[in-house]
Image (cartoon, rainbow, N blue to C red; front, top):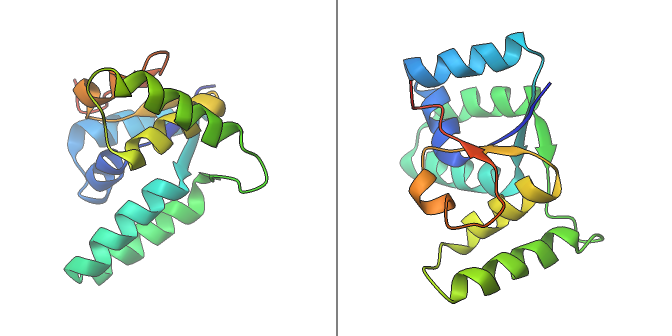
Length: 137
């Protein structure tokens, strides 16, 4: 059983029923893999759907979210924040990525998850992050 933390672009692909991503999602569900959505991804998806007035997709997302497991930046546990700081410091010497993506990477790493993202070029900068691209065949 694997632990997957879904990035925003993958959740968007699922909402649009992108065939290759859906194939991988169904395989993960068949394997009883754990699917996690972080509070950061929740923020990015809901913000985007509400701003675009996509109420049907928002309803679909909330249903999907309710059936997934959730990961949060915990205000009582600084482990994820410390990991995010570590990632930031390492990236600061080279090419930075957005803060939200640093948090997503930290949440994935601290919780022992493989990040599912199509932004592999971006996340490949994060040393020690396990990730996979479900858009790839």
